[in-house]
Amino acid sequence: MTASETTDLVALGDIDELVRYTDRLTDAERWDDLVELRDLSRLALERGRQLWPVAARAEYRLALDAPGQWAAKVLVSGTGRFALGPLPEVAASTHTWDDLADHVIPGIPEAAIAAHERVVRGDDLRGDRRLDPFVLEVPLALCPWEPSYPVAEYLADEARFPLPEFGGFHYVASEIRARPAEDADAVRALVELATAWTADSNGHCEAVAVHGDAAAALDLLGLGPDGARMAEITPAAAMAWMAWTAASGGAHGRRRGMAAGRFAAWWAAAALTGMLEDYPPDPSELGDAISELRWWAWDPGGPEPGWACRLAIEDPADGLAWALNATDAALP
Image (cartoon, rainbow, N blue to C red; front, side, top):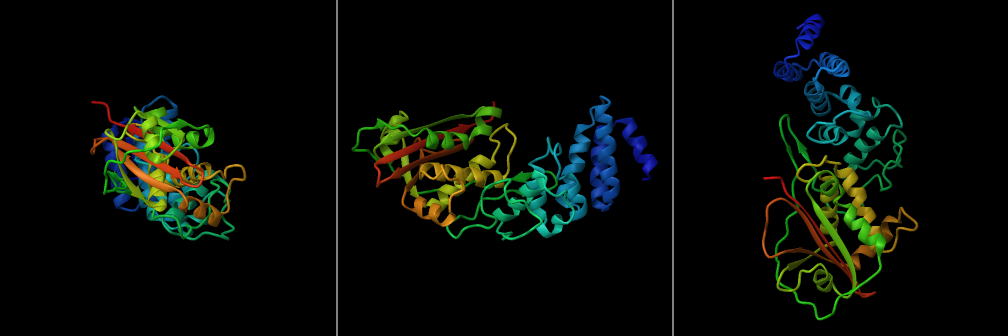
């Protein structure tokens, strides 16, 4: 199809045919034509013609399938609003940073986030002068104590977001009477893990801090020993679960991506260990600090549909504990 015919097809405004056309262009690796189709669809949208599904589809296929020089064209502000995931994460799922780095616009947040998305996939980008590391104040390489984060897999027509899974749940009773503690920073950081669930979807989230143990923190949530089960997990597993939660959009919210999820997990970990004042913390010191806490997953007595992040954390040295109950579900 010629450029003139592409213009004519956009003028007709047949969204279904235009979406199919984006896939044909992708299959034929006609990347310049796909960029042109995106641009023409955006111009039509500015004139009031509802071709946003076409522009969104073209941007998504460029980020996912095109070589770096074309994928980089959509790593700018305002793209990917209706894609299956944020385009920096989509591009990073199929491209290395080297594929993208020489083609992105220097200094823009979307490019740096794509680099951080490569970091959560295991790349070491420390010392890369093409990258501004201060978009997300976390290291440009995974620390030895960090988990293998549950990263997204993007395909042409679907996206998969693996969920951390835990076993070994059992009922745990507290022998300590729960007394509320003042720890606004930690409570806020835990609640903010599920911001997309509560602000943009149907989610509910609450967190508490107590003088006592983890089971006492669950008591303060109104979930006594007969209403919740606990399974102790590693600090790395807890980091993965917090990052998964913060990366997710829940049932209806917009996904933020695993790079943002990792940052939120670091922020929560720093808050729980009293290291927010001098953020970012020394990575080794943070790793040591979270290893001194005890971490549990908990549930209300069995699995349930939807999205959930239920954590309990205990600081044995200071006699403090925290609990998080974040849930979301699709509307019936």
